Image 1 (tube, rainbow, N blue to C red):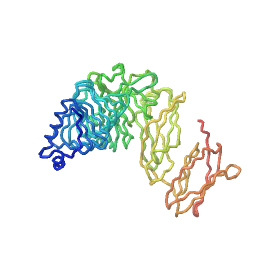
Image 2: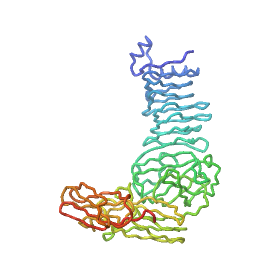
Image 3: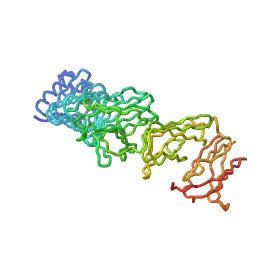
Image 4: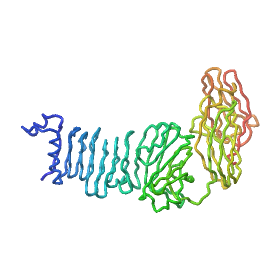
Length: 493
């Protein structure tokens, strides 16, 4: 029996009648007709437009090939017993696509499924390309091997019925979703196995679940990690619960678990003690999480964390910014460096606070009386060990104190500085500001012209090439002239 070639448009009965004279056939009959040939394990091809209506059902016993010219729309039920290849366009607005093979099945191409049901009684399903699932991905039987490809869950897409014996896995490739999360409470996002609670509106948030073991020195994590990337990612005070399966343990001992987190994609890791765990139900919980990055579970490495940060905050009080942070403990802590930013992207260091070295609970305070424009201010905290190792914590934001305590004249900060300075110029009218920097001999070493709008203006100037020492800064804008000393510090602490 020759393979069947489908190149018809079932929505148009005249096309069917011209191809099959005298034959009056309904879509459901057409699906049954093709299904009879599938019983003979023959491949089915679509080279044109094909449509399964809401109440239609098609059962394919052989391979299904939706050719490059094919447009296949499934709003009914499509049952596949062997492989599915779709170089063409395959979409399902409301239909079910079900894989029921008795041997490994594959998907080649990038179809968009509404409901995808894996009920393979053998080794399951293997992806050769990224697929999209807009509503339900049901793991009823068999594993799903990502094989380096991704599964995109739509904003309403959800993973169902995944267990230890029928799960998604793969050393490369991820299952991912992006959706808006407003103060989620015990929410298992997309059924992916990470459950988040926070009083903060995270906004548009992308979550990726991967299964490659993460490496921390000579230690490895379980075969599951999450990359959590929210739009708002500071002062979250969040609770995170990570579910996992026994088949993902990667040879690790559950009773020795710790939470690993990384803000650089898994290059370096911060290890913290779990607040609770259930090794029978296979989950681990961490409370009071300030920010989300990459997280996973691994065994304790035996290394003592230099600082256990409890909180970090900033707020305006009596015209100055009060910055407060506390630690549960500190070991070999040389000190903290505070950095500031007006955009949350480019930071500059402006203060260093010595640490206590070794000790238990302690609070730290710093008052920032440098002025910024009337906008949000971002602060970042960096901790340094005696051996020079540093750790940067998640930034926090606060409303600027500018409106309550800002001077009307021009000013420069930080001063002293190491690389960059910020020039705040309050212009009475639109026009250029002439800036000159002079050495101690009075010789001009740097000049620049800055275009100002009426009102407050903020400029960043890189002076890294200047030698360390004392300089004189002159700003001329309109009829206003500002003179101030400027000190360039060495980059070495």
